[in-house]
Image (cartoon, rainbow, N blue to C red):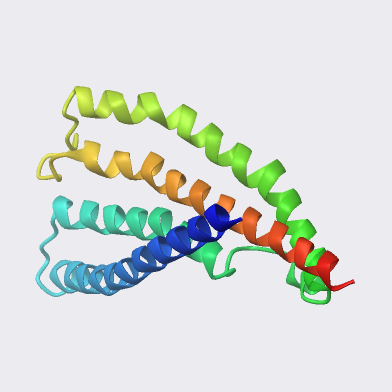
Length: 172
């Protein structure tokens, strides 16, 4: 049980710190988009690199922020039903969802994205567009990395849910 508590604490803290870093990237994304809009519409100048930087930042925010979203329970869920349930029933739903949806999805994405990312690194992939960003393989590596963090957070959620059920059994 001590291992599980340490695991939960470490993973929750790690994904919490990642969430803080990601929040700063959202501010950077706003600045980059404002720069792009101003330069495009007021100065009639556009940059492929700036446009690619926008979607690179968005990708990192979305993918790396997913584990933090799971940690803070801000992910998509049918709250109309879930909110009205007891903590024990919520824990059972979390266990079921984690075991049958979250973990298989993470494993599938990790398995299928491995060659995609490895090939990108092997060919030193860059943007195909003139003036685009170099080192596209870095942004492609975010896909498997983010799903590792989601998987780790999923196990943390699973362990917390099991503890909630056991806690309910001890109280009886």
